[in-house]
Length: 352
Image (cartoon, rainbow, N blue to C red; front, top):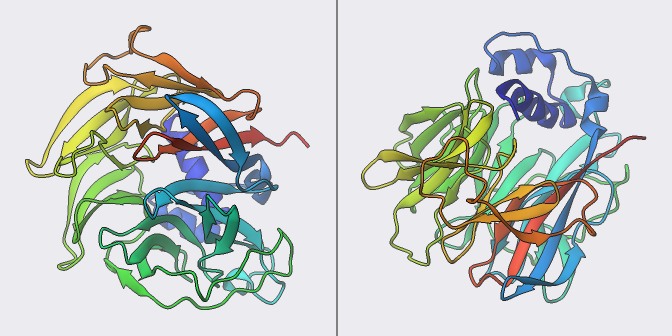
């Protein structure tokens, strides 16, 4: 995916939540971008959960199993729970910015209990939230929250399910409510994605004319620019060592996405392999291998440390074929710490 297409995809997010073109222009440096709200329904994204044994597929479940946008899976509670983002229609009296022309849609953070097969809405809020992530203390969820003026801010709220509700269907009966919590890094806005470096620091994907990777400290509000032209996946490198200080991201290079590793303690960056095709999404296998996708097939690369642009055909091997479950292509994915579960998003173009 090229950088212009990344602008398009991120703008779709704002269109879905009723953000005006004026606010889009501010984000993209005053460059007027014309989009139609029909774009927001061009793709149907579903969250799937595969159980594995010795890397072989045992079962595959469509967790979201509905029309619309369901994305950004994240394991929690020792991999017994899956968090993700879901989009629902708003009730007619809950409307973005009072603009009758804006799409009446809302994103919430969902919690799926894997063993019970039950789903609850963690936020069910008036404003949209994205990228639910358990904080290092285990007691909170951090999200990207869309403020009333369209800015995308880091936000944190207590993690619990006692007062939360089962999700309604994708209908106009959904009612939003306020969610108590706190804004983090209030002076840093238009955040797209995030991952925690430690209890006080994060890596942030920040929207702009060039998508930026920033390191941010919550206690002081300080941020530092690390790189630009980055992709949408920020992760800790999984090698089974909690003390490992490496975090990963991708950067656009000659029409492909190159894996780069940020060394938290040294504050340095190293270059590595490129992802297959035009895919910018990836995940880590607990054995230290890199996972990505080519269509509906998940690929694995045990030699990702080698800097090869373009990647050698021998670097990427097929890990699992989900073609019988996913009629589109796999984007985001995440693997459990014991390699027994793989959550992935299947994106299918809506031709209707």
